[in-house]
Image (cartoon, rainbow, N blue to C red; front, side, top):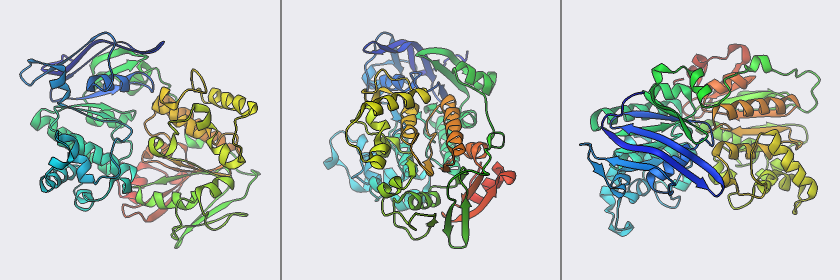
Length: 496
């Protein structure tokens, strides 16, 4: 155990229950001033609940939370929480306000009318430029609703950095960032911890990034502290995964490849200028690179935009779908990477979320007895544990909600499934389950198009990869035998 010298926060014996469900069962957790601390655990382990309690957005059961000033003297809960900033996995931005307003407005106590516009813009630029100077220069006056998911993530992080906080809690902060943006963020965090004594709690399921940024870790499992402040150098990746209660086994795409010969279905061709990609039934095509390029391809495939850059050719299909509804009805499914704002139907129960795509494809309105049984079977197949299919999705962890989005397309006659960051923010065990599920869908003849900012998972699962450079232009196609992280870095212009 690494001693907590000069702590900024200390949690002892923390408990929390929601009705009959016990989420935290006596968690211990402490963060030293000026350190970057990895908080690890599977989906549903209790990490987010503890973060909510530390920040005061949720009440605790039993246990103690103590805050300290730089001299080590105790602070009141209100004083301590005023110096804590959090960036949740799901963004909490105001879409009708500008980037600058979103970064600085929360730090003014007298409302928007009291904000000095020039000072606001200066502070926002300073914070955002620490992460991406070019993005800061061109985006301060843009409305947040016009940003991509990864751009919104940078704004969230900039807001936390600009708050003057002594402790920043980052929940999957790199889930929507490119490798280059992640590298810049890590440099900023290291500099701030070294120069200002800032403390950072880093929540992530990406082992490579955890080791790049953190020195010490705490592991929570089933609401209890399993590892309390242990140096990461003392734990192997396998040991961490085992203590999290995860499955470390891995299957390469080459060993899991399916035989395409004789597979039913029509091939799909997608074209842009001089580049043409023909995909036979059952192919898993990876899409790599910064969001600008992949977004245009995805939009063309699922009818989300009438851009003329890409054309699609398949027997019985139009060159471009007029809408996502038309695409879904033709057998082109889509799983968004933004489950909070574009995926999950928060006000509807689990069963309606699972059956959403069936409503589009089949046109039915009312839930039949057959569909209730179908929903239960789908949840069991995906190892989704829910008290009732009539519960709201908020009762499930983020990783489990991601499974609901995939469940929508299981059992439907989909000939194409487009996936946008399908493993964003999910734990290692759930990732492996999703990988296997995607392989199974491909084995039935479904063509999979999968965009991911994690090159390692593209290399693990995909048969081919189309790469985009930093300007959003398609830069090449990599076949299975030529795949490597170095080759991807070369074509995308991004560090691995």
